[in-house]
Image (cartoon, rainbow, N blue to C red):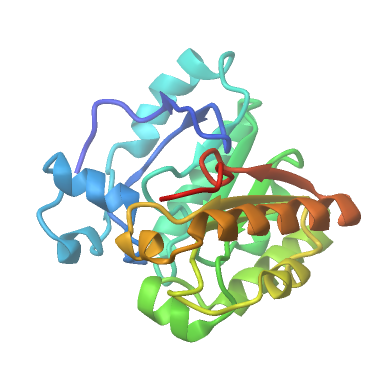
Length: 254
């Protein structure tokens, strides 16, 4: 599979520019996954089964050669990835390509950000020191992971890999998004926060696109309280934080 372009501007807080060098994602998240919904809507994939069979963009490195000179003076931070996962669990060929992309960007002075539900390789510590490495953790419950993130890496292994990078002096962060409501899973947010208390930044966001959330009567109050807990925890631990837009809302009739 080839593409005509790779790097593009985005509005997400992870980075002002991003690229997606894979079509699909083997993690097969069922929150549901916004990237999968958009890919199916616009005819890029026909089914969930097709989505979970990732396909590398064959001309990725050739496109980088052309596009990095064009974008490098515009990019504050290049994010991997917005609609796929750069370190897809049990796909070493994808991880290898991601490492080559990061090195190429760094060699041209471009700072990068990474977010994964896979395992971050320790070799990332050898790249540009200002890079930012993140994982998604919305629960510590492996049964929840098996249901909602069936192909993703075990949660403890994700955290352990991130901690190793932290111990090497890397900037690390965690995305607690999309965080589920109690009618999906009963859990203690403080337990997650304590488990990742070593990180430099935490991003917190609610679950969207799932009618089960709106079936939980006090979901607005729930997310407001969760956001407050994250903010208080981060302030106490001197951790940067960002609450995703739409997570904190005015409470009242739904």
